[in-house]
Amino acid sequence: MQVEKYRIDEHNQSLLKEHQRRYQFMAESIPGAERILEKLIAFQIAIPSWALGTGGTRFGRFSGGGEPRSLEEKIEDVGLLHAINQSSGAISLHIPWDIPQDPSAIKALAAQFGLRFDAVNSNTFQDQPGQEYSYKFGSLQHVDKAVRKQAIDHNIEVIRHGVALGSEAITVWLSDGSCFPGQLNFRKAFQRTLEGLQEIYAALPHNWKMFVEYKAYEPNFYSMTVGDWGQSLLYATKLGPKAYTLVDLGHHLPNANIEQIVALLLAEGKLGGFHFNDSKYGDDDLTVGSINPYQLFLIFNELVEGMDARGMQHHSDLGWMIDASHNVKDPLEDLLQSVEAIKIAYAQALLIDTKALSAAQEANDVAKAQEILQSAYRTDVRPLVAEARLRAGGALQPIQLFRDLKVREHLIKERGQKTVATGL
Ligand code: PSV
Ligand code: MN
Image (cartoon, rainbow, N blue to C red; front, side, top):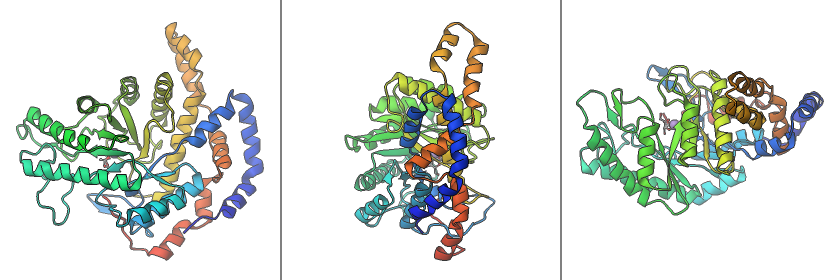
């Protein structure tokens, strides 16, 4: 299914008057509204191919119907999102779930929808049918050289697929670790993993980045070999200038100060990218901004401040991706909500009076600093975000349009009720 431009125009026309009233009222009160709009329009968030189907837990999975059955249909779904919000202009693939049979045809299809390929992801956390060695006891950390080699070869193959599609980064997330004390020699596991990553790093094309993603626990519950940002930073530093840490918001222990982690990684020039989601307990993979929008805003405050301090381009110098799962919502509606939440937090961060905040910090004026942050956070920036979407050719109310056009019903008619997307 494709969303024709005239359907978006009709939708916008019906909401335009009310939107303009709200936007104009807001634009008068914020300095630099035009500059903020430009940044919002440029800011694109990659959609993961594995988040287009219904997720589940080990207890069950309740399919919503009309899920994409192939890579082509996944691209079509991201194309739909991008047509509606003009903010999801990239897709992140996971290999081997998304091996392109004909890369140039896949590339051409994505270009038709205005999409580019973001980081490609490797998978050494599952055994694939016909695979020679098992990853039950890890991949790059494994005591057996043959298993390590298989994992290294897989990552290099993922880079090759990415090159064919025009991707420029690989995200390596390792589920390696141990479930019980005594199972693993930490020092040796670290060293073996480092050596494996070094071989993969050596295969990176000159313009590529490697993102080393960390996670506190799961599937291993005693130790993770890349368990926190310190370990990831250690690997990235030892690997070299093309290696960076990737922050997935759900991969920390409860109450971790993620905004501080982000600030320090940025200051070190070692923050590479993001996996956005939200959580209450752990790696819940919930809709971005649904549980703790204030934390998301504080993270964006550090991102904007830190990127500006280093003269970085907000939209292009870091990898912005969603990594989420949708067990009870329509995945596409959920992704529209996530993208909107990211843009809201970004817009609020752009509103912060940075000079006044810095002055308050220098004067140890704690109450003033809090007032400045919260006055930006409590501003309803939705008209600003909607105006950016409107100017880019998207819909004023994405979910409303998705429902009015009966997108899910169309997809079910086309693909069937019992389709299952590849992924977790
Ligand atoms: C692991 O929990 C993770 O966050 C990694 O990014 C994986 O590649 C992704 O989820 C999909 O399983
Ligand atoms: Mn992730």
